[in-house]
Amino acid sequence: MWKHLLRSSFVIGLAIICAGLLVGSKHNVAAYAPDIGRPDNVVLDISSRGAPELSSTGNYLSPITEADRPFTHLMLKWRASGPVSDTLVLEVRTSRDGESWGDWLPVWEDYDMWEHDDGTDVFWSQITYAGDGARFWQVRATMLPTASGDEAILHTVEVNTVDGRYAADQAPTFPEASLAGLAKPPVVSRTAWGNPDGQGSRVSPAYYPVNHVIVHHTVDPNTFRSGEKNWGDRVRAIWSFHTFTRGWGDVGYNYLVTPDGTIYEGRAGGDDAVGFHDTGNYGSMGVALVGTFDSVNPTGAAQDSLVALLGWKADQKQIDPLGRSYYYGCDISSYCSSPGAVVYNIAGHRHVTPRTSCPGDMTVELLASFRSRVQALIDTGGNPQRPDDGNLSIDELETSFARSNATWYSAG
Image (cartoon, rainbow, N blue to C red; front, side, top):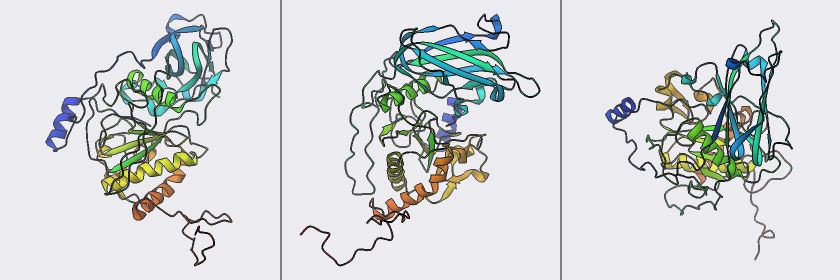
């Protein structure tokens, strides 16, 4: 995911009004609890003070630091110069008591969190699970010289920690059956997953008719680490870091799908609310698969839920799942390079913004099948057949299945 926020609200608002678009009147800013879910923040100033933790080789080991409050997740932001991507290795470890420590965990760069206003020397990490109620953390950096002897220079590291257990999940909502199209799949609402702002938001949403769906991945672990129990904690941590640390005022995605197939409501505002998930956002619904799918597929449960969600939206908005069309968000963004701002109606993030690898190579390989499955959902009213999967058995949902006149398989 890579977000390009359009910051001049007056100019954007004026342009949208002139274009006859509806902005921001469906949901008001929530009366929110300002401290619930707000991450704690510590900045390590390294190079400017000649940090005593900086070794003669340029490697760095931070002091053991106690967070203000217990935490379950952390995210790093750092400022560095030189050949950073090739030579700087960051790791973090956590502890409940400051004495017994977990393993050093690699800190992977999530360049999709970066914005142009950050500058080229600023980098963001993925979200890391820290354990069930950690209280202490420590960071280390290793500088690996290039073949020419050049090394990165680390200036600052900002460590953001949050306890994702500030609420507990409730059951997903099963929408009422609709006589006019595909039903919306069950979704855990913002209120049900414990969003401090409930169904509202501290940033009033803008609105633009959805005609594209953009698929993302969140670049964090695909499975629970030891002690991790609840996907909802991960969703709450993502909301916290997007809302406060990144400064978006809400989670960037409209929906999030976890590996167990649960769909979580993201950005407040309901249908047509504009998220913060790709280069332009206006005219798209952003859906994030929780996990990292560069080398492994999303789970079958996650794929099925994603297809159900995309099918509902495509049917609701009369989107051709197999087609391509003009995407307004692409047109207003300087980062989208698609000629004429024409992209797949169901696209991966990288199809809008080529600089990103999101939603991972394996998800991209599945997009064609997702489009076909969504089309099948629409064609069959929600009871699709699927292509023959090539195994030795054929079930009644596969297109090669033919029912005989025999009655031995039916009761009565």
